[in-house]
Image: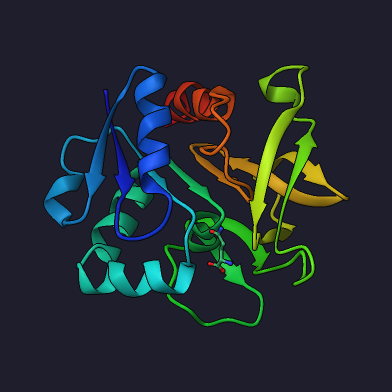
Length: 191
Ligand code: GLN
């Protein structure tokens, strides 16, 4: 199975490594034709405004939104979560906007630009997940079709809407495969 990783900016190589470790074939997405034959797509962390700008330049917005609407499973991490959100508090920046969530960017404040935390994520098992947050957003609001999968300090940091998955943290940075496995098993099944 081929899984696309949007490879315009940000932490795409780390996602590729984890996907390969999960036994699927990662495919770097830089042009519309790279989207052919993928069964799912990962949008990495980085800078959501930059990734959005580059998606425009590389003519990827339209085909990604179209495939997403048609049922492609999509997993967004950090900036990827922001790009997946329908609403971004106080921002009109371009977005893929498939998921019924409202997000706040850089939401944990300047003093804690970056931190690690142990998260309870019951859907991936009992052992806590070591999560890396880097200028992370969180989810302010979800609609009824969205399942909250994890919170940190009461803020929603991991959520799923059928085939769509969004994490405010960077599950590609710790070598723990469980979040990626969850995406590959549950979200692809749901599509
Ligand atoms: N702060 C970034 C943004 O707003 C996201 C940070 C990240 O992806 N690590 O796009």
